[in-house]
Length: 310
Image 1: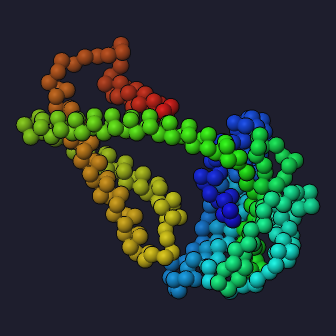
Image 2: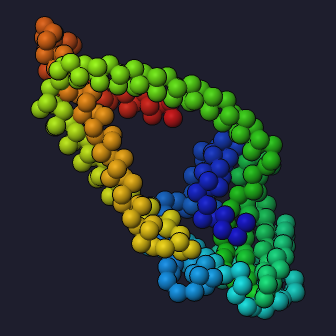
Image 3: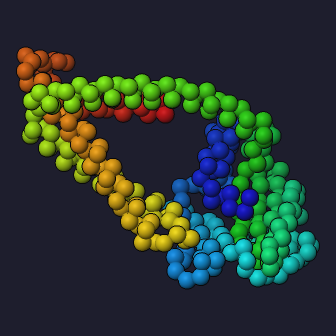
């Protein structure tokens, strides 16, 4: 798997396996070495020029102290290159492991040497196991080196996770998914019911316009700020094979349209809720706590329950 060290799903699986099977002490010893710490992931790509050549990309990951952890070079399928045999390609991979990871291939066990024939070159992927590092029952530290033609395009570390452990995790995740779907169904039904009641009340004049406008503006601003905060992740996923202007327009307009709909929904519920709350006799709960403090407490409780369920 040439790019597996840059795959977030694989990283989560590796972290979970080592933590559960090897224990917290072994896990902490491997974070920053075999297991990736928090990283900056930088992508270099082209969105203009020949469509086939745009498939070429560079990915660089850096640790928090600025140290480069991995450099990956993705080549177009049709890029011409050498057609090395196994021994010549393995020599390049071994030299890269020594130079970039400080590993001695002679002390490792070769687990795979996969050949991929491209239209104008031959690619190789070599996987070594390091039995000296314990990561849990059935698991292994894997060192990977990818060779495209006569260029080493990727060198990285990873964890081999046993198939039985993966299947057990998938079964457990499947059971949790049923519970999540049931919870989502309950929330959707409750939300639709609240929306119907709110629309009926609004049509009968049961609304507070000031609360509606304030909450709508606040929610819309929050959605826009969240989208702006998430922009680096969105930009990172832009596709080089599609027109950049179209992708940018979609990435900007979709959050705005969604934000308007969500803001109006929350504003509607708030306007109706405030209107009918004013008709009730004021009640002071939890001693002398003001209403805003109770609102904050309710929000924190909801957030805590959601985090626990997740």
